[in-house]
Amino acid sequence: MIVLTHALIWIVMLFFLPNDIVMQKKSDGSISYTLPKQIAAIFCIIIAVIVYILCLLPKVEHGKVTNNYQDHFVIISIQIMMLIVSVFIIINALIH
Image (cartoon, rainbow, N blue to C red; front, top):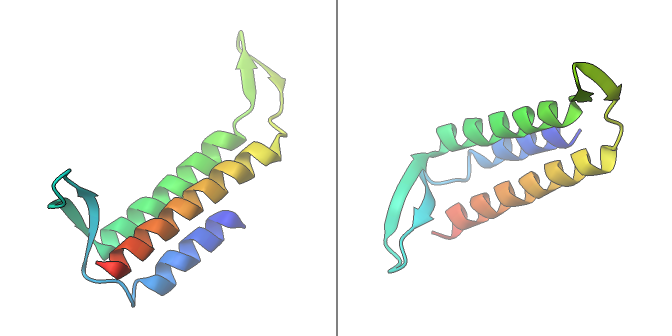
């Protein structure tokens, strides 16, 4: 659900974002590099999906699954943190 929300926010905001999104600034305030908004959106969505899949992998010791990963709190926390980072990237792009 959170991954879908993450993707939906990026898809909706693509229409409002400038063509280039600032990804990093130097200490003097100059822009280090930017990404086109479509690539930034795809990149963030792919990272969210990969992290979600990695969080679902069970714990394996000595080639055996010791327990299925059922700690949904950790998965949800990581996804919410990534969603917040994406929202900050979007807000930063809208301000600049």
